[in-house]
Amino acid sequence: MKKYVLFLAVAIFTAVSAVCESGEEKINSVISKMSERARREIKISDTKAFLSDLESVLAEEKNFPEDDLSLYFLIDKKHSVAATYAPKKQILLENNALFNVNKANMTLRADAYDSLLEMCRGALKDGVKLLVSSAYRSYSYQERLFNNYVQADGLAAAERYSARPGTSQHQLGCAVDFGSITDDFADTKMGKWVYNHAAEYGWTLSFPRGYEDITGYMWECWHFRYVGKKAAEMQKKWFGNIQQYMLEFIDLWKNS
Image 1 (cartoon, rainbow, N blue to C red):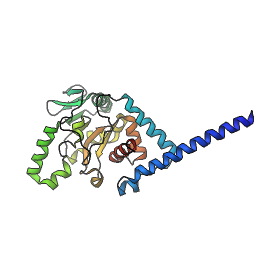
Image 2 (tube, one colour):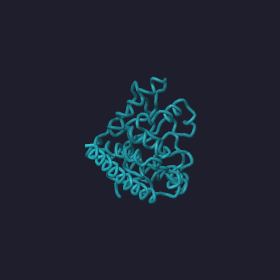
Image 3 (spheres, rainbow, N blue to C red):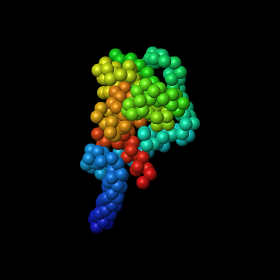
Image 4 (cartoon, rainbow, N blue to C red):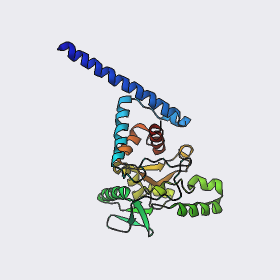
């Protein structure tokens, strides 16, 4: 009996080790396809723990709407959606007891909206009422916006702070601009609260300071994207809290 138990333990250990080794190979393969800076900064110190967290994050997709894009969908200067894309279920944002809006007819996809309400309840407990200044944008809206910026500042400058149509996180319906949409927002009570607590509700900063070479955009202290609580935790734990790194990694992992 003791020999059988020992044999079983050894077999299990061997199987787990093999999984970790193959997982480590895939991790390294995925990271090797990312930018040179990403390869320097992403440090997976515990393969087993990382794979466990990744499995948990990917399992969350089963809870996402089946008829819509994943909350992890990679959209950036190299990855886009069709001009016809819009979230299947959108909720209208209006001034209410939990948050304010600065313009009419803004919407969010339903799961992001539900999380926004939860976050706003948390903010109110700390004496902060959030202001939503931009949410879902259609392809045509983003096209007009981008063209206006190009006319005002030139193409090179516009591309540093505005997305071409089809490449904006706002078209996914899970990104929100809060407050003044200026750099001053970072030093406001609202800005500090969102920066320090948004991840607790599954929202993370999309364009951090000093990462324009990675995200393609200047620092935007007001722009947060809903990725879900588990993904937000993973972003902070394994990807230096850089959303772009995590979403690129997930995209490459799923397509490897």
